[in-house]
Length: 498
Image 1: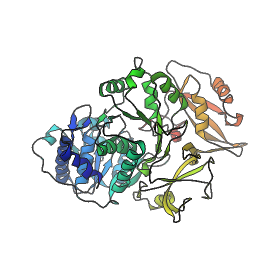
Image 2: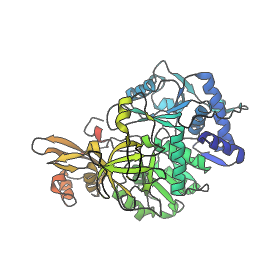
Image 3: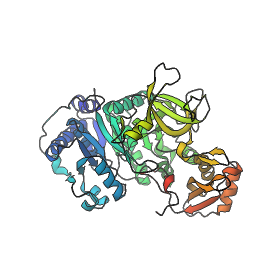
Image 4: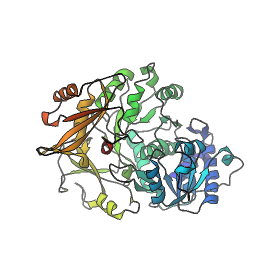
């Protein structure tokens, strides 16, 4: 059974049960199904194109539009409204869409109609689109390997690439995550993650709806509002990225009592800094659980749980996910040895849209230890190791690794040292060519409010925590570090004009 049939099936079995609460409305499963039927009819009138663009805020409208595209056997292309105009135009052109579903405030946010290529049909949704009696339809029965969504990754370099995820990819990730984390129908989910991002799409949209658990959305991340929503709805599952947890610490009247209901505070999207984890634990009694995954794996592959967690680990693998750590010659490494992380399982993407060369480099058939036959495996480009209990530890990214005097150094190690300084809010480290050492590390730091610091003091601080050759040659204080829509620091943009 596909996710579409499961989610819309809840409207028959529990029509009045709350599915979504957002900034504007509350959707029962019956209302969500009706909205998806309306939107399917609207899409059918507006375009015959296979791919349909969705540019919508984090809200109940997004899952209704997503289900509507699937009802018609179409492919949803969630659009990142935080991209630059040039990047957005590239995605729209590359994805072969001729129609975008959006709402007025979102269109204004990106700069109006002029921000969209002139040949694109813009369908602005309003309350009038949901009036009357919808024409019921049951979803077509797509093949599990049919393309379901096309998600564009910001990537570490170059233009965004379209990641092709099938219905099987999404369903496998959702159902295995539910089993792995022992998620319950009685859990309320809360989050502000953008639904064009794989984390927001799978973990915060499809997962609770498949589980028949209520989910609370808010379109903008405002720390005080998040605390108010937690007080009001008492969620059991909170999904955010590290920078969001850090921002919650700024809410002065927030207390441990506010977070008592949260049994699963999940962090993903980027590594969780030690300082943020410690402060949330000490201030809110909130024991943040890290997860790991990539857009190309739909995205969740690992998840820490309250009974299966370790400091600095991103958890153990979901059911059906195989993990292998390899050296530069693709030879499997032993426990606790750092190498490239290779993943296999039913959640691995179909490939990159219209990029066969890149797909071939990322997906290869490799034989995993304990397996007799080669498996279709994804090369993550991330560096890490596995311990004797199956916990995965991420130590860096292969392409971002620095080679300093012949020694391999990962930016994260240096960043962790910098982030321990009380004046530093966040940091990013990149390499700079050096005639004698090959490369030297250069750091960019963002300070806490009302803080100042001397770069020399920061270098001395680093010497107390890391080897001398890893200490940044240069440290630049910046007003704001470049970040992705989910708060991940973009090392490739460090040092560039903002």
